[in-house]
Image: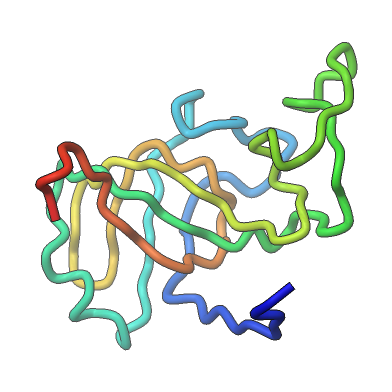
Length: 139
């Protein structure tokens, strides 16, 4: 395998959310996730300047409470379903627990961004934010 690490990821912020326990959090953001905040480091302020309310963005997080030794799961923790390879699921437990969340920006106030549809737990490190693209000619 080429390009073997080590690799370094540096969080650019963290999640502020009323969700504190994965057992009681929704499995996906569109399943009743409460409004939450992304709180960014001052070092990335310039990168946030063009984000506006109603924009849809992808938030990449480091699922810091996930297990990294899991390669097979029962989807949605449903024991009636067959065990499935983790890479064909959205399970948080995986070798590199990177979360991918499609959210809607509700407000931006300096280094704080209020979002809808984020199922990440309070304190989860934020790795990156990217726009959701529509047509090919956008950005």
